[in-house]
Image (tube, rainbow, N blue to C red):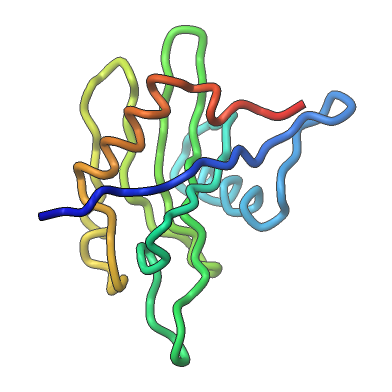
Length: 142
């Protein structure tokens, strides 16, 4: 039986003097993935997982420090979300979804990763549904 997922969401973008910025590493990662994959985004958040083994590999007797990030876009009448693992030298897409579609597109490459623990489809669905229900969780801070 799958244990309950405990997590929190930290919005990373903030508006200062009319321009939007975020922490260097996640912001560069989001920009790079958007350019490579061909999407536009206006939201970026870090997903903090209580189970630190999720989306991490064993390395030098410990765990890697990979970030799990939500890269998304909030539109007037819809929300698009994508979930990524920032590995430091690239990234692995986990899934993406539009609120209006009601379905989640999972990425097969994520399932093949050698992470100690991975998010299940059900868990990703819960995370996305939480943000779809309350998109203010990923709002740009002012």
